[in-house]
Image 1 (cartoon, rainbow over the protein chains, first blue to last red):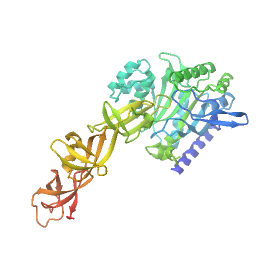
Image 2 (image 1 turned 120 degrees about the vertical axis):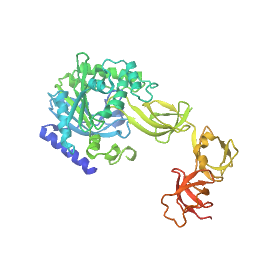
Image 3 (image 1 turned 180 degrees about the vertical axis):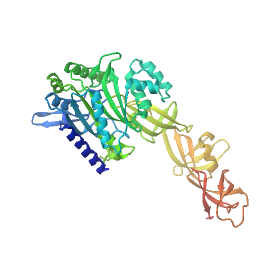
Image 4 (image 1 turned 60 degrees about the vertical axis):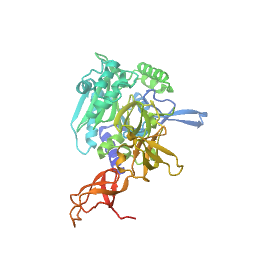
Length: 313
Length: 190
């Protein structure tokens, strides 16, 4: 397994060297964190020169913000392989620290980047697989017969009950998006990536995260996720480059955090000024190396691909 | 009232569900990269034995079930209740027919049984994994056949019927695995 990991990392580096994408590093600790209410950051403290009384630092949950600052500064295409940290996540597919491959392609939209994800993954898998693209809307129609962009929380709840999801009747979820997450994880994801590479794209605008929203009926977020054997491997965006819109989303996410009694997180002002200074149009994606390694080596639990999983760390 | 949050879920944890004590068999953490996290658990209803799946929103809490397992000695049955005793404290509890269930056919006085107590009352009685019981009835079988192939039914002193090799005779003691109901070996009288 150690050799398989080393081999995978070497293959990835070769792929990007040949593609002319530059490997970079960015800080793990920052004064700013991620505001996304569904992601919990680890914090630590630094005390010393420049911070005599100590200050709180956030361990990154993805290297997205500083990588975008490099893009805004004119770095051109870049990639990074690093450990990231997320609180509250442990299971057969989750470990609180895990290895992420993240890369950005100026001039690409999310379709262009999906193609590059597919060629990278087919490069590292033992044998190459056919590629399937299915929009978020098509997937919900195909597997559940419902329009995810138009359905109300109540009709999604009914859909979950009809789909036989245990407890859907008594489960209390905050909004339509949480019901969509329930249906997606329990009734759609298991079908994706079976003997093929599946890309789910064009998410509800309410789940844009850091993606551009494409106006239309319905408006959709130019976001995609990539699946292998029912497991989400990567999440990508046609990146939001508008500083004002970015700030509005940060503020909105912190407001949701307050509503839910979660700690608010200082928004990354360095990113906002980077975006304001002129961020190139680009697409970016974060890919879980540990989960990809699970597929490459055909094992069922993330523990098996880690030298020392959380409980033995 | 004690309660557990979803992050405390793990196999063997006892929780209350729809008014019944349940045991978690399996807990799977499910979370889309950006979005709502869930715990999907398989639980066994300890009263009915039924296994069901439940989905919880991460961070939700459920009531803890006051359930514990103790090893108690089976004393006697009075027709309505089966009586057990803690061999150290000599405290006694009685279990009804529902709690005793299938264990009934394996239980012999003096045997140590594992009793699941809910709020202090027995809800499950599990016989020892292996019991030694006397054969009270079986066909004489063929003399000289020691191969054990085929076998025949034998009734034991506790009432259970198990398949035994042809050479086993009435009055002999045999060891049985109560989890599978299978014959293990003959036991020489001590």
